[in-house]
Length: 167
Image (cartoon, rainbow, N blue to C red):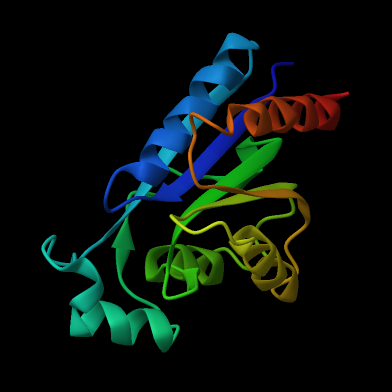
């Protein structure tokens, strides 16, 4: 039986997508089947002046559940590990990820690895982990990436943890 991993992420600027894609490549180099699911808002935010967008600010800070797509073919029962990645907006995870978590609350028993991307050297992934655990997700590892080029060693740790789950 082959191990399978799902990577669920949202990326507006491309940073989180870059990390998710890199993790997928590294997992596949290690013969681990990996599926990427990029979440999208049905009603997306305008690209210019992203953090000055009133709707983005409101939906992020009020922890609003929004309409998303990109997970139509996602079945959590097919995976041995699920990796969830979110950029950090205003100190928290983005609305698309929050919505995903609410949609699959009590439907995912699979071990979770969560990561955040940020321009600040702050342990936002610990906050993400606490959000997940408050919803009774089983978080086995968390990490924050500020610069993938400087922090690729963290992905090696992720690969090791994923492999341990399969033994």
